[in-house]
Length: 381
Image (cartoon, rainbow, N blue to C red):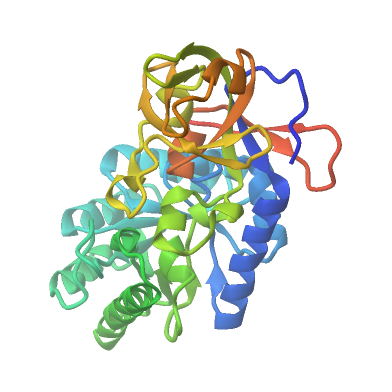
């Protein structure tokens, strides 16, 4: 897609048509599997993007920060899962959001957190909705599905008779799926995620806990699951834009990636085969997620201003405000002539969430063409 002239760089480009295709693909898959879809909005942190996800059929959102919950609740999106284990220092903030109208669900993974949250709710006349985080792949946090700690946490949530907290269910995230790269391995991980979370819910129900919600999800497993029997909702985030890591895993192609960073050539080192741009790690992030994959893209894949890949250029080095692109093509090429001062390039990100976090808005290439738009996004906690 042609880029309008006169755009000051570096800036974050969003291809609206690709984004919309990604949204519809995921929603159609969740509809076919018969589950509610609750997208993770940490990827975009943008009301305009989330409106499109909800319009496609998503029900509620997932957030990683209470600031996200606050901002989206102010936009009228009130069904919110805060999918990070809550700590006492954030109880009052969560309570304020609930009293302002958010239907906020919280997550715990320890007896202490459960007990303190229940006491906090009871002391303030509020019943917190809570999920227990289940560890189905050994990747990060949570309680193993077969660990008796699960019962202790559930019991702690109703120590006060259920006045301060209500166990709504269980949730899990198969983050180790990011290390996989074959359809069979991804499908197996999706089944492990599903089976583990469902098993935890069934154990809790057998012990007398209602456990209505069974929430699973990551972009790779959501797109690879063959069955979601027993699951009530799925969460995924990066699918909305995709990135090089997702392409390396095999759940999208580079043509599906909706984000790129537009940059400008500001200098050359012909003796070293370098092209210098104005997009360093402050514009693309320091994420090197493709380093362990079959193709290491350095700090991102280099394309021309229209988005066509330039395979002979590698984004090998990044300083704060300088990107250093290494030429691996014909050494006889006159780099200053091929890529003149002031010419523009695009960098496709390794990790859409990390690159997005470097910017305060998207320059949107509209699906219908015409002038670009600017959609604001927010950062911070």
